[in-house]
Structure formats: C-alpha cells, structure tokens
Image (cartoon, rainbow, N blue to C red; front, side):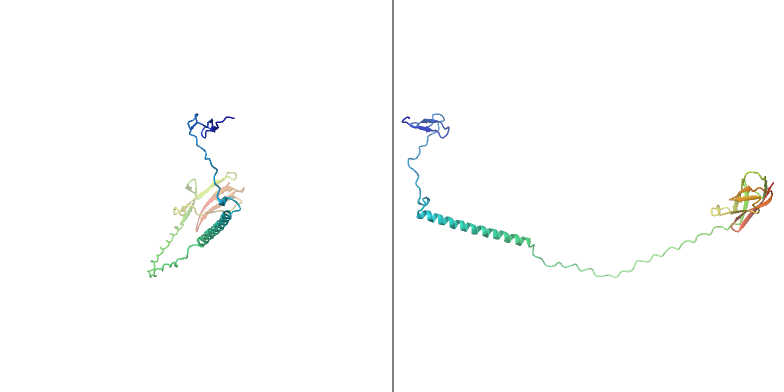
Length: 210
C-alpha cells in the first residue's frame, strides 16, 4: 500500500494521486472532505428531554392535521347537500288574463242552391218492327229455315229512348218462337203474329211459316 492516497474523481470516477488538485483525465477539481464528523443535535438522541419534546410536538401536529381534515370533509358534504336541494323557489308566475270576450256577429248563413229537377224523358209515341233496317209488317219463312233477327225503331229517337226494354212475344209458340227479336220455327206450319211492346205502345208483324 502506498503512502500517498488515491483520489477518485467525482466526474469520471477514475483514480489519481492525492497530491494533485484536479483530475488529470477530465480536469475536474477535487473537493476536499471536511475533517470533522457532523454534530448530532440533542433532539436526535433518544432518551433526552429534547427528543421527548419533539415526539410530543409530532403527536399534536398529527392531531391538528386530523381535525383540519375532518372540518374540510364536513364543509364539502354540506356544500353537496345544499346544491342537491335545488334552487329556492321564486315568486309564483301569474297566469295571463284572457282577453275580454267580444260579441261578434254570427257569420252569414249560406243559402243552399236548389236542387235542379231532372227533365223527364220524352214520352214514347210509337214503335215499329224492322228487318235489315227496313220496316216490315209481314214476311214468310220455311219451317226448316234458320232463325232470323228482327230489329225495332222507337220514336222519338233520342239519347234517353235508345235502349228501353222491348218485350217480344209470339201468338203461337208451336209455330214460331221469339226471344230478344230472334225468331225461330217450332215445327208446325201456319200464320203467327210477332209483337214488340215498349212502354204503352206495341208493334205487330204477321209471319207465314210454310
């Protein structure tokens, strides 16, 4: 072991001779350590009166700290209760007074328009039996001839009397039958009368079946 002590640099942690004032490696100046030990106060020594007084003061400080903490918590709880209770009720709101009733004249009553009376259809004055568009009063057909279709003209010819009901009849259905103006032989021969009735008027036509 050498006589000259080694110093460890506080910056680069390398050792150098104790005779040097700064580190030859990084140039950091050395700090000389104090030559005496630190003095211990009486309050740090256990069993002394100062240590007892320090311990008593610490207890009182802890007690005051707990009291202050309780006061703060009580104030916070009080504020929460007050805020949750809602705002104080204000003065009652007065409802608006309805306007005074003013008597007004009733609206005029609309007079309904009279219902138009429908014009009655013209009275049928006459009817005639036709075949091929021509008026006929008699005709002949064989007992084996196919059916014939008869027509009718109604007077006056207007929109209202174009399609009234016409009733067709045969005076002897064993010789000739008629339905909706279609005449058909029934097997016997002879004369037969075909009639077309519309309302109060009737037209006739004689038919010979041979």
